[in-house]
Length: 617
Image 1 (cartoon, rainbow, N blue to C red):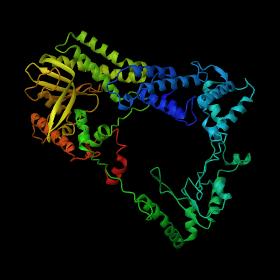
Image 2: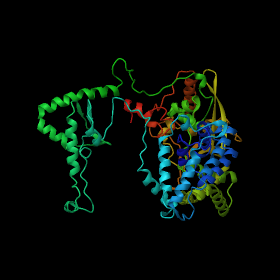
Image 3: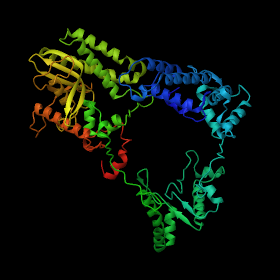
Image 4: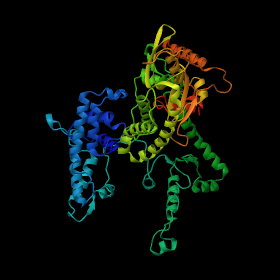
């Protein structure tokens, strides 16, 4: 009952489970979006059912919109579908101890499961779709014949375990051929193997793959029998296959119109021309060979014209892919953005277009294991919870350490239960981080009056043209010093942005939070009289467990921190004003050097297509 296998099973067109195919697809879609995407549920159908009940009851503030759109009817359909699946596989599942069994008996249970999976609805006189079409599916008929043959075997003769059954069934199923009687290939084209090509006469034949190692294939020697031993027992020598393929090549060349092709590269590696081509070139002579190559150039030109979008007048001209730059109605620009989304707007405006204008949210992969972002979420929760517990001062070291590790144990509990191998890697890193963090806290706290962790804020920012943008932020930590100043801290479990990126305006998170603090936009905090200090703290737990890095101007940049904050706010007003006035386009990756390595919408923007044309790295 692995999530990816459940989805693959439900996607099969013959799976009905007593429902109509549209009902199965609707319920499977709800099950996928609501439960199976994200962290993997516990093992078995019971684990998926528990995850389904939890997903229906718990509130998730950051759920993607597709999950929030699920109606109570969708959840009920997913629950009913899961129950039908559990019933179908009730007798066809492995025991915990994988006890010895009879393979024929397992095959009978397998057949019963398949019957339940492919059973159509019985109400309202509905019949199976294959019967409505007048001809049963060929694969179903072959599968029934296979099960019929296995039932003829005498019970008890094929002892085995459930874990042996997949290999046993696969070996038998490979010998069965499913004929597609309804399949209609192109009337003027056939793709033939060497054996079929010997028996047919055609108007034109294309001989492909004339590369050494492909045609002819490599002569493989046996690891146990050398050539004399093979001859002694009556086996053919390894070179016999080479002679046979040479005979096939000569026969195919007897066609009145023969086109011979080869690949200069395979999987990026250069290839060697087939020995048949080399021998043909040697016997034909250079003059005849050049004439043959010149004749084949016509077909290469036609293929190149198709790739370039050129061709006869009746074929549409395909435009070269360009960097997408949509410019929808300015009224569709979002009126509220977070400081992290402002960074996306600067680096990749197309991501804002896809998320806020098109309303597309990226779904998590199916049964994904926790990754670096999940570890970062856990670390942020622990450090934020510790500061929330002690906002104005630290207790004794023993008590502080006890509280910090208690918070960590609670946050890491789901990882330790479900992913012990990740826990074995992440916990030692956190232990190193915890020791460095407590020492860092003990050093900073005497100069602090109060610490505000995970504090949120909203700022109504006036935009040219009479517009207003609500800027949202959630600062990891804002410190109020005893001298009246402030420090905004951003914890990074990964690599923080470089100073040049911040001063160039591609990572304006901290500077915009500084402007919000000066405007009194954070809840529970008074407006800062001066520009606060900005500090990145890398909390990776590696060789340097905790690495504070104050934001300072890079060499050659004479701007002070207050000037930088003012410049970023002015730049934000100008940028957002251009979008709200309809003067800017949502370009995809306008600054490739500063673009993020991965975006959820790169496939939608077809980055790999237009970047190759434009020569972007």
